[in-house]
Image 1: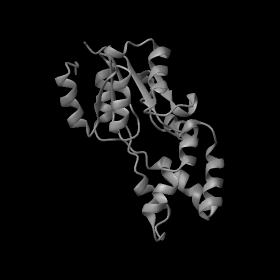
Image 2: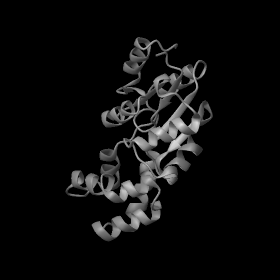
Image 3: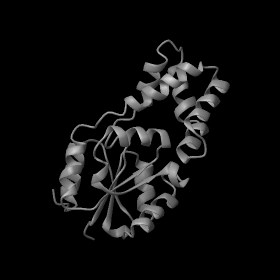
Length: 201
């Protein structure tokens, strides 16, 4: 079916998100940075933060208590995390090109604090007709609820909607509710995928 709506993930589609880099820059002297990546960015505390159940300040206190890291260093890490969210090459240009022909939406697992930072830093947000953020609704990808919330809120037909995300399980989650979906690897690759699907560029 012809694509009428295009939905973008944000992290690693529009802006870079690299926990390994964040930990290396925040705790360069730590003897086991790989473990720290898991204990911070893969832990249930990070999920709770992205679900909107706790604040960033509460998450940092939990990390401090559980991992014994200095609160000042954790606060620096939170700032480094935000500042590390730099543009993916060509992605914003693609967004502006598509905006002329399609209604665009964003669907992101993200925290209140990071979203506030991204909204202040980047000017592409008005290109979206709607934005769904996990912390605002209490659901994360790839749960069916977050995709259904998008469809219901903006009255989109799943068959006419295309979702772009870098994580394969999120692609599968979208497909499970009937949304067309393609994994984003880089801008050149996704442009070829869009052309294959008949998207007007």
